[in-house]
Length: 141
Image (cartoon, rainbow, N blue to C red):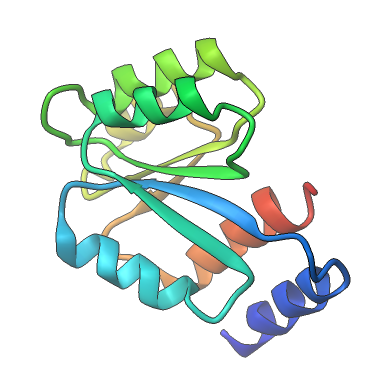
């Protein structure tokens, strides 16, 4: 974790006025709190949507404000597959990473087919989360 932390800190410290924004679409409080804890020491701000409908509304209002979306797949009102498709129609350049406990092969294929750029399985692999943030947020900007 220290290696990834030093890479992210090195890249984010060069632009102190830049605050990376990540929208976490997650209805489960424990999962959100865990993601918040993992990313709390980095130059990122987390925002939360509790379901797919809320995520779409947030992106419609502020579609260029987010550097990354972490999208749970099993959500109330509108699942992560459909929310991803709609968000990609609004702004295809926002990277969306599926976050789900359903890590079987068809589930992963469905995530990519819906427009997700990457995939993180639950329970979380901290190194994978940090690598995703490094790749889609820090190195992309």
